[in-house]
Length: 242
Ligand SMILES: Nc1nc2c(ncn2[C@@H]2O[C@H](COP(=O)(O)OP(=O)(O)OP(=O)(O)O)[C@@H](O)[C@H]2O)c(=O)[nH]1
Image (cartoon, rainbow, N blue to C red; front, side, top):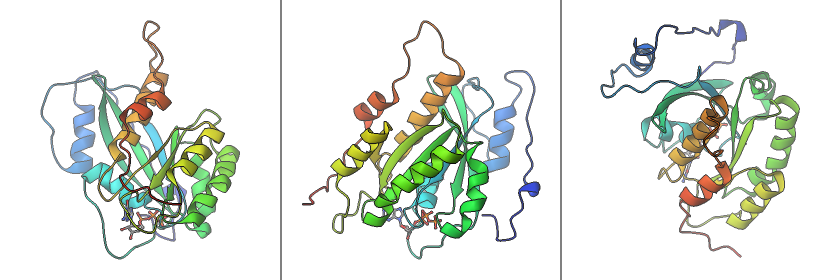
């Protein structure tokens, strides 16, 4: 987590270079997680991709990232993110490794100018609302306007209705999320950072799409992110809302 006195100049970029198989990814994983992951070697695609988590404060962005990264849920008192924070994760996609650097942004309005500066570096954006908060859903249009203003034109966007584990207190119907996503032509699913529902799938779909864009073999059919998500996603069991 970066404090209030956050300064972009303090962020350094280090690039690992060297022949395939010398251990660049293992070095990064050792630095990031303090462990060595043995096993069969698979090559890395590209230089890695940046994914940003966006959405109102409290929708569950930090929990969503921690669930993906560590398989754990942070329950209890809510501590709002200050500025921006990031985690690395390497995912295996069709026999190759794809590195994701995931930026967790602060949803609070007062940090908006900090996060705007990072939009242009993101190849993918996960835009979250909270299915128990109508306001967080209503604000999605404003988030999309902001995205169109600051992000790259070809950025991959995915809409996620988080906290789908909550059985009472639902304020946004699944169909309303799906219909907003259709209107903007973006893939959609409901997720739960608490149970892990669809969390891995969201990142995996993004990784597959980004990998496909980086290396598109001519003889392979194009990866269809909408179809992939529709075929893989788990539906929440609770959706009774009238
Ligand atoms: N039931 C349930 N609670 C969740 C879920 N995800 C997050 N929460 C809770 O929602 C609150 C906010 O979660 P955070 O992940 O900190 O929210 P955030 O979007 O990162 O908020 P900012 O950092 O302010 O932008 C916490 O109390 C979490 O425990 C979920 O999937 N289900």
